[in-house]
Image (cartoon, rainbow, N blue to C red):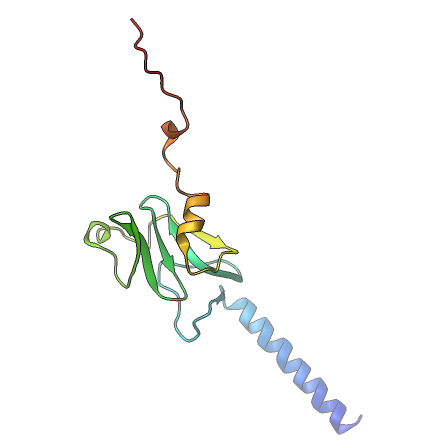
Length: 134
């Protein structure tokens, strides 16, 4: 066997070993920011590209790329490195969250208006009658 062919076979073997090792290590998160692991509360169970995580019970987002929380403050979406005081009691390791797939834009407002704005408001679509029943 040619020495060049042996090198190619060895390289292919090493690549396969590395891929098997990475697959057995658990979750892999792809983000636009390399070098920093995701927060401890974010633990995906497969390879996926996710930029935002939504906490529906508290109605705020976390941007994995920018490492910032995004929430409404006085009707304006703001980005902060820490949560405001009203959310500090929340244990994010136990809180329910949803991964926002296929949305990588900077402006989360549009996504929120299209997908989450009416959550928990079942009476919003109900028609109200102005007349009282006797």
